[in-house]
Length: 249
Ligand code: BTN
Image (cartoon, rainbow, N blue to C red):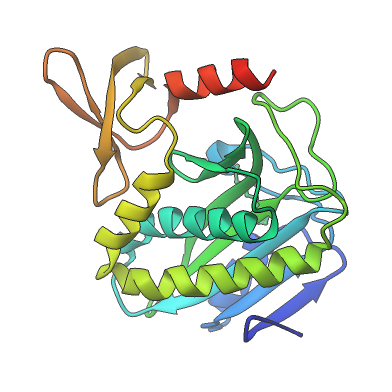
């Protein structure tokens, strides 16, 4: 089968489609190819978390090669988040999704999709973009609010639409040459840009305004005294998100 012209390898059950992408890259696979599983037994999320992967949701990884060096790969997070945003807007025009830095896509302040981009091969650089989309159900016991698209949408339609939107956004990105356009489109959909944020870096909390996105994907935080910090990872709390969640509760 194919999704928007990209070959798809389907698995009834697998440990993790990102792990499979790494194995294939090690064997020389360059893609582009989608790896799609109905169920994962070892689904992985960001920050070392696991990703509950029961049947009914989409678990898919897009594996592809680039000629640019792997340093550019951090930008793919934003390309993928935009593609998920496009996908849900096409499938559910009333959804009004927003993107929470770096790549969570939310509806009404609740997460329905997670993206895990990884560099899985060198010479040429191979990138795996793992996407988990809550279609029929949302997991229980997550440390953040979650939602799903609804069982009325077939999982395969989500993959088809995602493949289409990802191909379009990757073309615009053009291995980094089009990053300014990606950053602008991402910024127009980002939650809390221009608003108050608190970042926890180690044992320290930094308060300020979310003033932009750096070329390496860092969140730019400007404190009241003018100090500029680039946040690369860790917990970031957005005042706009807290307000949105209070409104939708
Ligand atoms: C996140 O924590 O937000 C990222 C979750 C990414 C989950 C997807 S499901 C398909 C692919 N395979 C994995 O093991 N993880 C990603």
